[in-house]
Amino acid sequence: MIPVIDFVAPAPRTSLPPRSALRFARHAAAPAGGEKVRTQDGRELVLRAIEPGDVAAMQRCFTRLSPEEIRRRFLHAMSELPTPMAQQLCRIDTARETAFVLMDESVRPAEMRGVGRIYVDQATDTAEFSVLVEHAWSRIGLGALLMQRLVDDCRRRGLYELWGYVLQENRPMLQLCKELGFTQRAIPDEPGIMLITLKL
Ligand SMILES: CC(C)(COP(=O)(O)OP(=O)(O)OC[C@H]1O[C@@H](n2cnc3c(N)ncnc32)[C@H](O)[C@@H]1OP(=O)(O)O)[C@@H](O)C(=O)NCCC(=O)NCCS
Image (cartoon, rainbow, N blue to C red; front, side):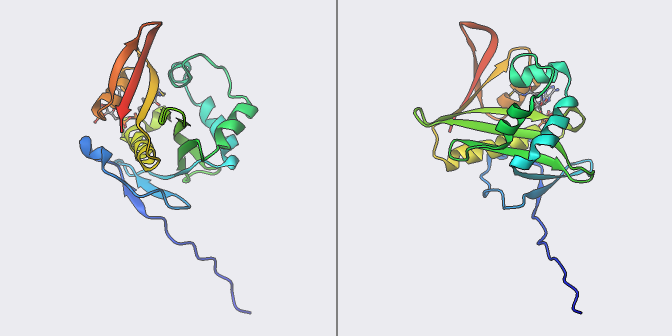
């Protein structure tokens, strides 16, 4: 009997982006199946589009977040990520949304270490972003990588502006956005919240 060998083409490897404006160099769309990202400390993740089957991994990721990280991501406190909300976040309408995840496939089940997403407003040709990187994987360029891919996606969509709300206390995100060329301003009626924008 002839053995059947499943052949899976190796995913292309992606290095983390350089630490400068070069981070906004254009990239091709993420290939189906994702692309490997190797961190400077030798860990490996797969960057790919979010899938409906990511609900459980997303809920486990949520349980690893501190209350402060949750508040910074969702702009309010949340004690759990209810399943209907996780399902909604994973089953996206690609005409109006893009979401990339960074999956750690060195463990079983695979764990979600980061998520970046945009919601497109077709009326204004703009998109709102959000991004999250799990603490144990922070400060190695993954937040910048996700933001860079979202910017690329917005440009592919021909949008005019990418924007997001960031808490004024959220110095890491404000610093990240500043480094990536976003401008920031306070919102008069929303004390403690900054509006971050990038003209595309
Ligand atoms: C903000 C967040 C996404 C940053 O992710 P990250 O993967 O750690 O970011 P990076 O490693 O790509 O950092 C890129 C740059 O951001 C800035 N930065 C990131 N973390 C920082 C920190 N703790 N203090 C100061 N600057 C920081 C730095 O300029 C850094 O560049 P450098 O490492 O060359 O100095 C992550 O901390 C997070 O998920 N926080 C909770 C959720 C959140 O705040 N989301 C944003 C609102 S939508």
